[in-house]
Image 1 (cartoon, helix red, strand yellow):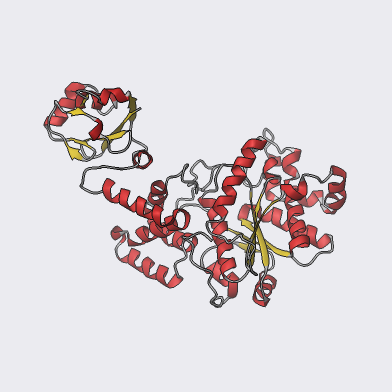
Image 2: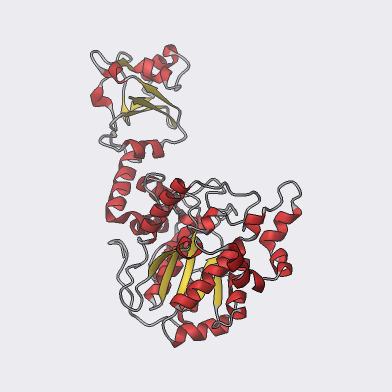
Length: 443
């Protein structure tokens, strides 16, 4: 596991066993056979798997729900298999989609798979060591050499077209006359069923987990295992991640919170959680931290007593960021937050942090040479950045004491910016009044 992940928890499961723990933290929406699965989990170690398709260069907070569910099961003594969908990713899952996914080229797929492998290791032990040591597999390894006729004989012969068409993910797309459903997408559930059957036969995998939009695909896999004479298999799904106002997380929704620091910086990641709506905080603490429920209950009570103190928000941001970005990421994010939202002048900040902090502010990029010699006039910088309509307005604001450069008040209309006035490597932050910001970048 990563340095930021707590050691394996050898304490016995709570009342209700593994399913009870998952349910108490919000990870369970449906189970195919709850009594049967609860008994099987209580009887001894169980091998389970969850799949992640490489449709983006990074996993995101929506995927993290499944990753954390896997982590908790591993902590309770069960063995995870994380599946990177090198094969299914080449087709595209229609579940939860209104349009066909864009097919990716081989180079892009391999790059995406590399990111997924690294990120799964942040919360899972995938070393293969010991009874709970997990595995990372790629379904392309056992699918790429299967001939079509063999696939139809081994998988297709057991699949009911009536049942496939009746599944919500397929039925909804078939009802859309303009979009429809490609044959490749229609067969996706057969490929995922084949994965479950293969893992059951080669690694003794008995459980598949996934988001609630995967219910039909998981049930199809259980049916295939049964029809091929295999052992009993189970499925469980967790709710798709949404905010208190019902907005869905994820790359399709356009509001993904990426796990890759190049796509969502540690600062931006931290800020997302600290700015979560009050109605989301307790649920997010259960899903995205390892804090005991008793501690979360105390934070919930504190939130009810004094919402403005935002104690629970800060704990959520700190613990969630630590899991993905480690202690170093937390320190950087909290340090930047203290500077940006304090009274001291900005200095020595990362350009990416500044971009994330002021992502909605207008900006301009000017030649670096303009900082040399006598430097760039403050009034010209304000106008170039769109903070004022002209230098006359800029001068008036400066004279009124309403202008700040990197959070430092400037009251001299003749002030000129030099290299020492950069808050980051290339960026200076201008402010007029209380809330109007602009970034000036020098390249």
